[in-house]
Amino acid sequence: MLILEDDDLLRDRVLVPHLQQFGFRVEAIGRASELEAKLRQQVPDIVVLDLGLPDLDGFEVARNLRAGIAGIGIVMLTARAERHHQVRGLSEGADAYLSKPVDIDVLAATLYSLARRLQLSSPSQNDHSWRLGADGWCLLSPTGQPVALSQLESRLLAPLIEAPNRVVSREALIQAVTSNVHNYDPHRLDTLVHRIRKKVMRVLGMPFPLNAVPGQGYVLVSH
Image 1: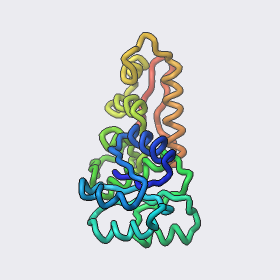
Image 2: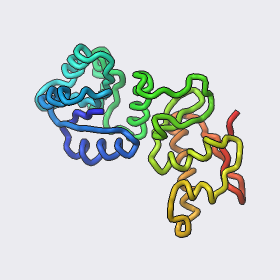
Image 3: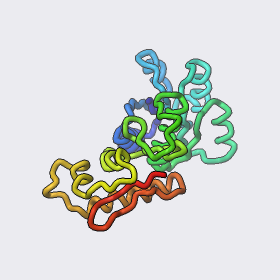
Image 4: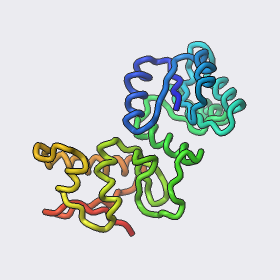
């Protein structure tokens, strides 16, 4: 993935490190004039593109990318939130148009969704249960909608998804998230579960069926 964003702070302190935490391989540049050299080195699968670049209009960049590279994914990330800008962005070839400030979870989920459409990842089309996709970096709903996960969240969910409708003990879950089990505060496990439930509801608008079993652990209910 390539990020084209001229705001150094947003690019280097927010977008790059956070998207790397979600499992993306990220390179970043600040000017459209650097793009050609990057494309000669390697063509990215997806470009995250700001519109307000100092040396070239982002719409023109998107138009050139769409015309010159078959199958590339383009996500516009911009402060221009007006409807006519959004319409133009999608018309110029963007696959998605997001306004700043953006929730990093929403951006990551958008990127995972686009990657699936580009067939960069290929979850089973016949699997209608909750599952991990993109090498564990996102949670997929039964209908295939993605929720971006941090490494810690992915490690917690892996044993639960591998054993649907069965209780996974608190001890096993703690072992999944840390190597220092003896000094781990068990309350952190409950906080992590709460955070995942809240994230799923915020991103997908639906409850995540991860239920506590008092005195034992957690169970992921699958129908």
